[in-house]
Length: 473
Image 1 (cartoon, rainbow, N blue to C red):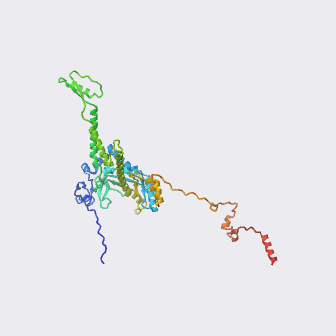
Image 2: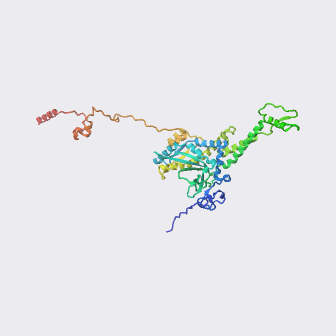
Image 3: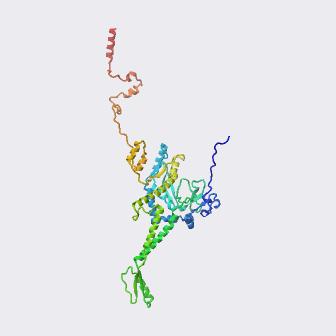
């Protein structure tokens, strides 16, 4: 029988792998079990950044790490990350099933004990350095295996080895004193790696903004140095003394010493024939100041996406609002990238170690609102009347309030619904009425309830009644 449907073949393997790029041979180390020119095997690779290659490979990442010590870079980076950390984070369940809700609550409780904001800041350094690494510290507790800290590590201590079976095509190795080149293998569920893929060239070390920031920061420091020197020269004019030809070397040295101390002395006496004048520079230090301001705006534009918000000399209010929106949008992208990395690593590992690898993991995210929503509480009431019921979590995040479940009001208790009480005097034979006498024998007449209106009858009344009935017969 002929096949009616035929499934197309599935491509397998990595054809255009990073180590087989003929234009990127300079980014391959001469280590590994195979030749770096074939792109086959477990080859240790190095960054494709030409600046890092010229300065020593991944060991030159300290060049990008020092960029954080520049005041303008640090200010812009802090402003961008504050947009991220100022937003509340929450854990979103995979589904509405009770099991997924329990997993969500467990993960949220574990993260509450950690400093999540510092974790976002540490992983956000990948924006400048290309990639960032955090080591997860685990401990066993009564509630399970939980992380208690994530410690950021130096990027220079890690190299990447080609491995097709891994998620990114590479596996990370840690450099030690005994393994300074190829490094040692690292255990699973131990290190979190966050990359900044600005160029998407497949480089496991990421594509950082440091390559662009490095010359800007270098020129900025030189411009500030020239600005300070020029300001000092402009504030203190140059003293020029004219001596006669008959002046001796000792007299000239004495006169030079006096001129050098003019900033501390108020007056000086020159012999006859000597002439003194002060020369002020004809230029202006605004040239260097404008250069520094221009570089500052370029750095702010590169990191934050805008160069107006938060500056007193910015343009109109509308322009500043647009710049603020642009910065918030870029911060939301950085936050989403880090949240996705933590969801696939830390959150997934917590679920694996406590609930199993087959359990769906929740999602970590932050609440970003690019613009203020015009939706008000009366609008929500109209939605409820129309049959749409919003979630409690959404209302709390949208209006930034804390809601509490409504407690049911106690109902009016009737007389028959009153709680049962026990009085020993009135119910002396309660035990015998339920369980019988001491011998365990109970008659139906003794246990049967009395009819309404019935009275107690003695033995004499029963005998008299039986005699009257016999006489009538």
